[in-house]
Amino acid sequence: MPTERLSVVVTRRLPEPVEARLAELFDARLRADDTPMSREELAEAIRGADVLVPTLSDRIDAGLIGQAGDKLKLIANYGAGVDHIDVATARQRGILVSNTPGVSADDTADMTMALILGVTRRIPEGLALMQSGDWQGWSPTALMGGRVGGRRLGILGLGRIGQAVARRARAFGMQIHYHNRKRLRPETEDDLGATYWESLDQMVARMDVISVNCPHTPSTFHLMNARRLKLMKPEAVIVNTSRGEVIDENALTRMLRAGEIAGAGLDVYEKGREANPRLRELKNVVLLPHMGSATVEGRIEMGEKVLVNIKTFQDGHRPPDQVVPSML
Image (cartoon, rainbow, N blue to C red):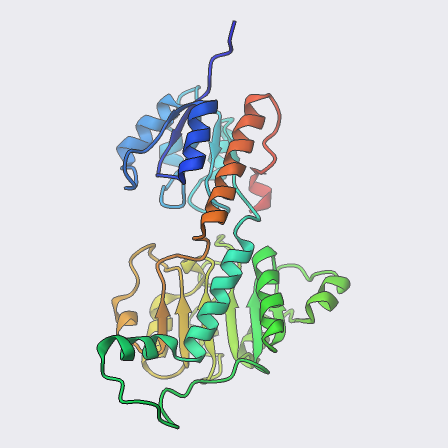
């Protein structure tokens, strides 16, 4: 007798090769369009599926998990971050949670460097000038930015992505500094040429560029708050390719408008897709629509990890990328 196939509900459109493989292996309910599911649709999915495959646009909170019946056994998140999932409540209900770590480190680090260069070299201003047709030709003093070589880069969170940023920044001649929950091993610091700061305040006050690369957890919410942002040098810039909630966006906006911080490059925002509208008015700010991991290769690799997690679970084993509350 053939075994019954797992019922898998996918909340967003995924790359075609991933969707095709999901349909081959499981009883997969795929999304017809690329709009987020409503809360009612998520509740229906969570009641009827063996496995839910959400993304960061889906809020899987305690109230939603409470509507799950006995059928749901795995939330196989498409993405590394799980701050949109109440992992503790899921665990209490006997529901496993998995994610897709390590896939997007290089892609996100590339985008971090793009933002650093975009802000310091005023690339969007030059682009806007060319697109408007108002460029009057080369001038010795036009659109002068700053050289990144020799600048101090302070990385907030030296995990996989932070280390990938450090390697790229070092190739650009930047000096690498970092603050982490735990100090890295001496051999890792030596390999990256990185200087550890136990005090985040002291590091922030001395850096030319701050790169936010830590996850969003209760302990990192507004880690870069108004008080800490005021410690930054007026000529310093800050970039964020991690989670918007780590920075107090209103405080950052006020300081950028007042010239108390030289610039910012943001790929993520405190309220999801709702960036502070005042940020769009500023020439010293580069805003991107959460593109850090948006490569064809990376998104397919993420899907492959989801497939492995579900298939391993189906075979009666612990998903290789299982997330437990103690990890958060």
